[in-house]
Structure formats: structure tokens, C-alpha cells
Amino acid sequence: MSKLLFLVTLFSLLIMGNANLYAQKKGKESGTKQSAMVQSTFKVAGNCIHCKVAIENAVKSLPGVKKSNWSLANKQLMVSYDSTKVSLPLLHKAIAKIGYDTDLEKGDDAAYSKLPDCCKYRK
Image (cartoon, rainbow, N blue to C red):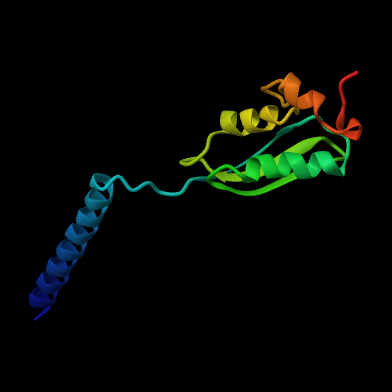
């Protein structure tokens, strides 16, 4: 009786293991990617609440960005994003495109010149 129970258990484990392997292989073949949520914090120049809204909206408009919060006090942007959909360099480029400097990118000069006076941080 114990040999029969052992064989049934072994057979069940083999079937479940093969089913899991098949599911993993199927996912790889279909090209599905697992979500890879990442949180990054980096410096972004700015002066006021208008800057906060503009900076946060610039990154939120990118695919895969879940949350963004720019701190006026320490000039730091915290952003949570899916790294399979957007990269850290693309986040920096999106902010620079609207005229704000980051750790990695200088803000676009033409966009900077169009910022409201309260947002202009370059001396």
C-alpha cells in the first residue's frame, strides 16, 4: 500500500512539474515579459509648484511610469516605473525636453526660455 501511495505521489509531482515547465516555456515563446517595477531617485532642477507639476507630468506621460513625486525642498524626483517599458535615461530625456536639468541631461535651452519666470533656476 505504501509503495502504491509513493508511486501515485511521484507520478503527480512529475505531471505538475511538466505542467509548470510547459507554462514557463510557453511564456518565453510568446514573448511575454514579466513586469520589473523599479524605483529611482535623482536630482532635477526647479523652483516652484509649477516646476513640480511639469516635472511629474513629463515622466507620468511615459509608458510604464506608475508614480512620480518631485520634492521642492531637496530637488529630488522619486519615480516608480516598469523597466521593461521605460528606461532611466528616457526619464531624464523627457524632463530635459521640457527645459529642466537633471543629473544626466541638460534641459533644452529653447524649452527653458519658455518656462515662466518663477521656474527659471539658471543664473
